[in-house]
Image (tube, rainbow over all chains, first blue to last red; front, side, top):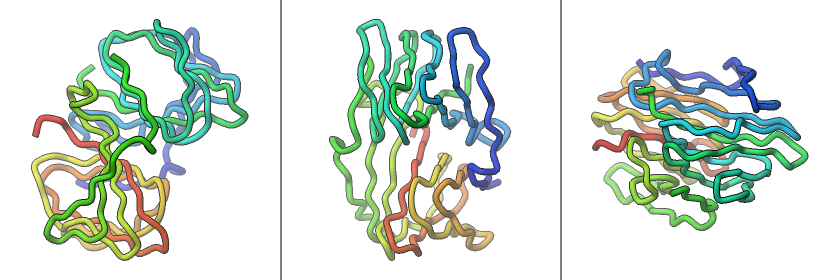
Length: 114
Length: 114
């Protein structure tokens, strides 16, 4: 069945993980909506916030919708801004840091088989 | 390896399929960038344009970035606008039609195993 909603109707989940500050996740499309292979989420990072510097066995496909900041990896810091596309392979340490004056918002797609 | 580019650096591909009008696809992240499981694309439909009314064995996970129009399915027409989230399951007839005054732009994620 087709699932159709507006983002304003979807609950935002505050992430309360170690090493995270001001991060929320909105699950746009996941298992509950019929998805079988991958999950589309939006990650919002408040001004001054950051996602945990961590690694995991699944990849990220990211597209920056709004804001600016940097992506920290083992190779250093890389500026990111609206319109940027980032593929983070499995087992790669990463953290997004918001250094701008508004929310940093990005699409983050992950595989479902976790 | 991490892949990182801005959308302005990515080639837009005009879709020249039967039943399509004014449609382009930008492949943000795919096999060429290291992706193994799913492909993130942006579909742009010009004012007055539409994607083919078709079905296929793979699903779509869509997020409307800009514009307005409708989604045509076997159940009829449903208005879509910026911020809308749509999951189209496999084997479901669908077409997006731009009825607004600007481009209709949407994220469209599909599985890689086609």
